[in-house]
Length: 482
Ligand SMILES: *Cc1c(COP(=O)(O)O)cnc(C)c1O
Image (cartoon, rainbow, N blue to C red; front, side, top):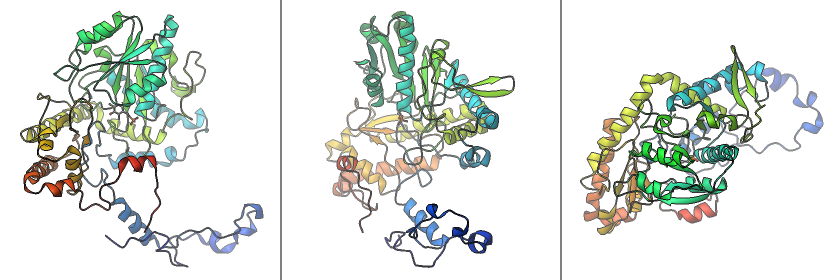
């Protein structure tokens, strides 16, 4: 690692990293054509370094943290798959990247066509009528989906009071329920790690607005009773919301609409390979049944003949929920991903995601407790309880992995598994990478007997060691202190 200097400390007066065309640089001084009121009084304090120094500086910084272009990132429930570079190429095409959001329908036909086709692909993949691309995160999708349900129920004459959520749910689910003005009712998962239709039936009544179910659930297991659950909830006049943040196991295999859901959300920044997790803004989408279409956020993208336009004139819409039309650059990336793979390719994504997860699960399950020992979907959840009995916590194992250039799996979630280690390898990793990761996990397990301190004190090789994560979140201080 090179010396720890800030880019300002690397600066030397007079060094430049740019060259401007002669007409601007020399021919005419800028103050001859820019009004004085727009000119700086003092020179901008910018570092003066050649391009080569600047590139090295940022490449160096980029290796200080872990990211998907550096190595394996098995963060469960986050689908850290490789983001193909062709997505960035497409998003960078000047017709997309330089398009002004207020350019008007006539000047934005290509962008509108892309949004129309992407929305259509997502609706068809999941079996629904229409979709919206405005939400910019999974959590925002949840809130909007619940508001759509509320609007539809109000139109029927009864908004109702509560939403049922399983105990394996992602934390954003209950938060969204509260924000949408509902109360949370929690239903327990069975010993098998899935929901029982009987348990749900015992909880559903005339005040049930909806049930939110992640499928496959956060244990990586398919909710096998989903059709029965859908009947129970629909018969009582409620609706079904699917948290589809991670659709990696379902692409081309099964459609949420066929399972009985009324709404599904997508995290384009998970399943559809757009960057996330410090790597860029997210993008969500929601697909809905015909009953919910009138309430979708405005504007919607519509097609008339071969012309596309934005429709703001939607009386029953819950309104606009994001500036302009969503995170357009990420919509281009997701569309590129879908078009490049096609229907067959998407099916292979899910086949390989499930295969990789099961392969890795089988390499690890002898040494690490596997509370739900059955075929998993795109991810699986181990428990570190055996290791804890030997004096090392799941947190320590997660930290030790960093020394081997792996990102840690998700830990201590879902809450219903003690010392949870939630692993999602994704389809973009090779057998060799999975073998290497499993080998390191087994080495760490042996190290617990040979040298437990080394695990408890890890990481040893990262730029910083153990951080006070609570303090770091509460008192964010990103200043460099040399
Ligand atoms: C990631 C995730 C969410 C939240 O998505 P964000 O884009 O982070 O808001 C919701 N549910 C599940 C199951 C998830 O994995």
